[in-house]
Image (cartoon, one colour):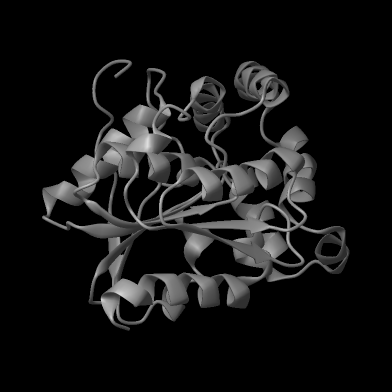
Amino acid sequence: MTGAPLPAPVLHATGEGPPVLLLHPLGVDRSFWDGVVPALAGFEVLSYDFPGHGEAPVPEDAYTVEDLAAQAAALMGRDGRKPFDVVGVSLGGLVAQRLAACHPESVRRLVVVDAVAVYPPVLRRQWRDRAVRTPVDGLEPLLEPTLGLWFTAGLLARGGPAVEQVRRTFLAGDPRGYARACEALEAVDLTGELGRITAPTLVVCGDDDAPPFLAAAGELAEALPDARLAWLSPARHAGVLEQPEQFVRALLGFLGEENGL
């Protein structure tokens, strides 16, 4: 831990059944999952905001992905919601990997979406630069690069609810909260943790995502035991939003196997 444990955020729950924890990506909040939650009938769906995102306050001290995983484990263990399935996108996918590695008795199934285990040097430098600049420059300079990474050119040209949701949520964020998360992304390296993951795993990636994520999808599917790989098409980094029907179909097919749904 880098300091005091992160405070417990507000955990939002809906539905009844086996618990599924949804972890959002950088720069948005738990509303990222609003289009998926209604499709998960038969599950108790749980979500919350990462520190400095949505309704969660910005922590004073730096934190790590390991701290985020410890926060999630404490949150789920508080009410005895174990074992549970965990689904994470990008930053959320890193937290999900760490959760599965360190709490194998708690994570029943793991879904890693558009995520790496470690960032290549060029992206580490990007996170370091953003951690420094964002509190000064704000989030607006990062909006268009984020939209360009998250959505295909065709969807960006058409616009629509998914693009507007990200635009609105991203710009409403706290630059300091974004910067704190960037610090964690620069430092993270879970390559040594992958061998500890025992949960059956579904790796999901947009077929037009950035090269580091495309490469990581195959590497994770190969490295993790009992893993399979699903592609969303056409999609970039936010395939969950751009291809929600494809994503839900893959997710339900995977989660339903063990839960008898």
